[in-house]
Amino acid sequence: MTLLFLRTILLYFAVVFGLRLSGKRQLGELSTSEFAVTILVSELASIPLQDVAVPLFNGIIPLLTLVCLEVLLATLCRKSSRARRVLCGNPCIIVKNGKIDQKMIKNLRLSIEDVMEALRLAGAPNLPDIRYAIVETNGQLSVILKAEAQPVIPSQIHVHPHEVGVPLILISNGTVIQKNLLELGKTENWLLEQCKRQHCSSFDEVFLFTLDDAGNQFIQAVQKGV
Image (cartoon, rainbow, N blue to C red):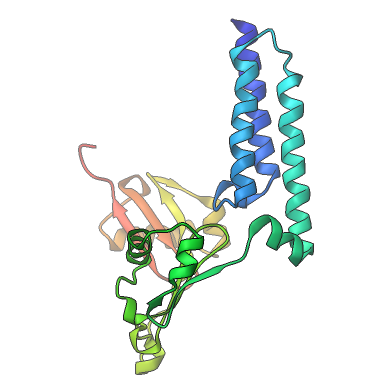
């Protein structure tokens, strides 16, 4: 039992290390080769867990080999456009000027229902509004709207909204995050004053306080009885 426990821990860290080594794309948008590696890694890791008679390295070595191969192929794709086309494919335009390319969706084995669903998910349900709809190499759909269908941006109507930055947490459930406070150049005295303005007399009464580098702040008090 102890041996199985230790093997599980070692394989867990091996899989996590391998996926981290293969890069952030492996944890987000997957290409065909990355998806295949992910499946194979999970299968290889399960073999030593199911049979304790199988040496642990019989699972770890193939796992690391696959991950290293994926890293090498990713490097090759980055340096060679030809290799990238072979391994990852090319983006495919399935809608042009409001018309579905019937030949392209046939080659991609997509139905009209698949295309319409993807367009709705992309926020572009009306075909006449679309200039281009492109299936990217990771399988996601990118939509470029016609000029008259694009949303109005503030500069077009001469409006100047406030800038928005990345909010940093300054107080989390009553605890002051000193690192973020220092990064924004604020002090605890300033922070306490802001809390008092929102009727919170101490940090313990604040559930969440965020502030970005543009000065936008958000504060939520602790809910009583929770």
